[in-house]
Image 1 (cartoon, helix red, strand yellow):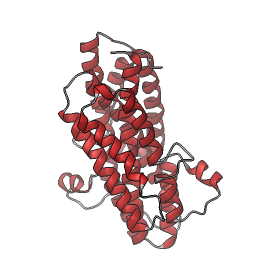
Image 2 (tube, rainbow, N blue to C red):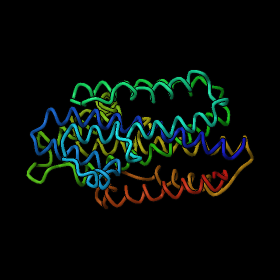
Image 3 (cartoon, rainbow, N blue to C red):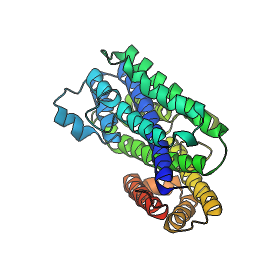
Image 4 (tube, rainbow, N blue to C red):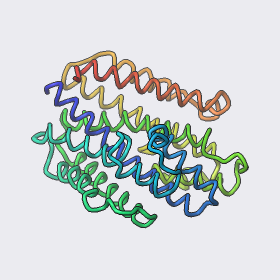
Amino acid sequence: MLSRTASSLYWLGRYVERADFIARLVEATVRLDVLSPRPAGEAAWQSALVVTETAEAFKASGASLTREAVARFLTSDTSHPGSIVRCLDMARMNAKAVRTALTREAWSAINGAWLVFDKRMSRLDSDRTLALVDAVKAETRGFEGAIHRMLRNQTTLFLRLGQATERVDDTARLLDVKYHILLPEDQSVGGTVDRDQWTTILQTVSAVTAYRWLYNDGLVPANVIDLLLSRAELPRSIAAAIEETVDVLTALAKRTGTHGEAGRMARARHARMTKTRTGDVIVSGLHQHLQALIAENDELHSAIARQFKFH
């Protein structure tokens, strides 16, 4: 496979995963805002900007921190690269570059997600925002399903590698922001607002039911952290994404004969993750642990680009 084709597939996986994550984050934030008192709602939207690394861009836009303004900024604003529409635009551009490597179903899902925004750029109240992100989620789910039905070759492996790399970053940022920024200063840990926010985190990664199956003592922040950090049974957990990265790089090495820095880094990271205990991480510093994970994931991304000669 040509390196530029591999690069396009990898970035296609990343951009679709990122668009799906932002859609889920916006949906959960809308629901939290509707249920929460005003200060908590504003904090929730501010946290959504921080999670997506768009807080500075939003501030530069001069818009007020309102539900409609932030929802539009994260969904349909084309002025910055952190919106869903821009992610889908980049995904579609990469998909066009590798069109012959994709099935009709995979291409239709990408194109369908991009076309969602053609007729939905009007005023975004809560109902319209939820309808918009629900449509995006439906198409991204269709894309993920199409990948699972495709021939298991280098095409699907590079797509999965992009998805897994993006997923580590997204889930780590989500956990980090919640733990350090989201709870308003006048709200107690374990209070109603705090519980609503942890539920929102679970909703963002589709883990509400999984949490109930795995934990029997109600909504406990340490358990939510454990689920998203260490439980590989949850597809969107950091542990699952780290494991997926190792599996994909191992499969690529067997198929292409390309062994290198990225594979070694991924295996070393996975070995450390299997020895990590959530309680120890919380005691020693969750923020520091997650920041180190994010930095290491960025280094792995660069190593992947070097190993497979992305341009």
